[in-house]
Length: 322
Image 1: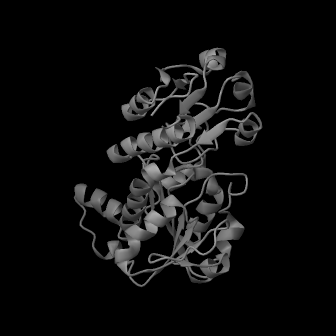
Image 2 (image 1 turned 120 degrees about the vertical axis):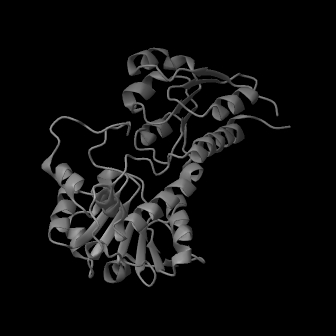
């Protein structure tokens, strides 16, 4: 492998598994690892770099990209690209990479784990037993076998979720607006109307775009014939939290397993702490809501896989082979 004649300089602005740094350096790139860097400092120096590696530290919007006169690529070590102005980057001929393949297994397994805990009251019963309470009848669970699981978005995480569920003998159907012909041994391609008609359990496996923002609202939920369970391991703003709470109150939503919340900051590292809404308090206190802090793709294995996938994509596009 020979690097391009012009040595590419790459700025790392987030903490990333060292494999990515090592693979790019070994491919002949010059890498600066500066996970502590601020937006202000990065804005001053970005004109020196051909590539930038990020997770979600801060958004790369028009102001930032306008200063990036040499930038050839952005590597977002994760699935979504919502923190990047992809359209403006494209107008500047900047290639945007993401790596959803890197954590599809961890997100799929996490979603199944949350679902099992939700329908069998595992978290609630655990807390009760640890507090000296032994309640059996009120914690009677529900089997997944024989139920209809609907998946919206049949990409990497949707497919992995279906594969992980395949041993439970549920009927798994999926709808993806931008794909056809994707029925396989795990899932049957369906329409959204079929999901509304048949679902017992709904899994959201979508990127956050203007089209999917608040997709799940009161009108959407009212269209399901059955009362449903919801699993969301994608992005918090795909669900309108107030409408979710409304439907939890009236029983249309039987329970929710949420790894992501509308109230997360853009870097996903914490929640907005000011003016915490009553809806969030409701979720915290509801016995049929399970919450985790955006960790579905956050395993030791996925950390390494994300780095490897990202490095491979960048090297394939920007390093000549002989």
